[in-house]
Amino acid sequence: MTSPSNEILRVSDLTVEFPTDDGVVQAVRGVSYELHEREVLGIVGESGSGKSVSSLAVMGLLPRGARVRGRILYRGEDVLKMPARRRRALRGGRIAMIFQDPMTALNPVHTIGDQLAEAVLAHGLVPRGQALARAREMLDLVGIPQAEARLRSYPHEFSGGMRQRAMIAMAVINNPDVIIADEPTTALDVTVQAQILEKLLEVKDAVNAAIVLITHDLGVVAGIAHRVLVMYAGKPVEIGDTDTIFYRPRMPYTAGLLGSMPSLETSGGRLRPIGGAPPSLINLPAGCPFAPRCPLADATCRGEEPGLVEAGEGGHYAACHHWREVAATADPTTLFRTESEAVG
Ligand SMILES: Nc1ncnc2c1ncn2[C@@H]1O[C@H](COP(=O)(O)OP(=O)(O)OP(=O)(O)O)[C@@H](O)[C@H]1O
Ligand code: SF4
Ligand SMILES: [Mg+2]
Image (cartoon, rainbow, N blue to C red; front, side, top):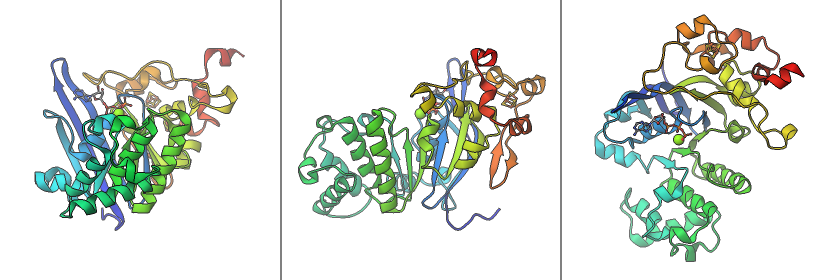
């Protein structure tokens, strides 16, 4: 298949395994997606679904011992086959990452200014003064007041929201094409979350980057992402345009996530949480990994794991034996009706 000219990243059949004393953890089991210039792709799933591991694989930041297979093409070039030097240049240069907890990425013993300048110096031959000027410009861009003075601050002198802004500044300082933002606002309180997301989008537009926005909360990607990829137990289980995912979900898990979003109706409370927990990724049983929690599960589901099939127009794919039944349900979120609702 020829790739469209504006495609910057293509991940094909990515798998990541971690050999451990208890067995092999199958953290990522065949993830594929493509990302176009300036696009926002949301990756959504519960804790442990493989969102971070698949992104760390793209960045080349997996721990030693991780087994990676598949292809990760950056502008057509396979990242997994690049010489280490070229890969380092890509990371933090063309592809940048923002982590959930800025304190793991910021060094406590260096000033914010030094760390930002260092990020510039690591990727280009510029005089230090110029790197610091760029650092100040970036702090301005992310909305940190008195940027000049703040260059001399240490990370602990910043609030959580300011640290996350500094992380965004660090991510975009070398004008990347791709920003992978891994739960960039989860650690922040709700009002700050909204401000940071808004800033992230503004900054992304300023540098013309595309974003992979990772979150466990579908609400975060609404109104932001062009497309959404839903993950469960290391696999993509549904992918489509954001509106399609929100209004025409075909995989019960997606419907469950939609039904469990906080709503006005329940004044911020969860409407219908999905019961149960995801399976262990060591010795996964045969069949659909969602079966133990799925209201539509039957013998077919327990016998064979469904692959992604086209379930609608415009690149809509779902991994479910019974997606047609989901399609025929007026409001698929009601599949997860609680007992009291079913009685009442
Ligand atoms: N270094 C490792 N060794 C063994 N297992 C690992 C390692 N790193 C991650 N895992 C496992 O891989 C699976 C996927 O983890 P991952 O961090 O990608 O989940 P996630 O979707 O990002 O979850 P969260 O929302 O909690 O961040 C989990 O079961 C996790 O325990
Ligand atoms: S394949 Fe079966 S168990 Fe899995 S999501 Fe579809 S209906 Fe549920
Ligand atoms: Mg994670």
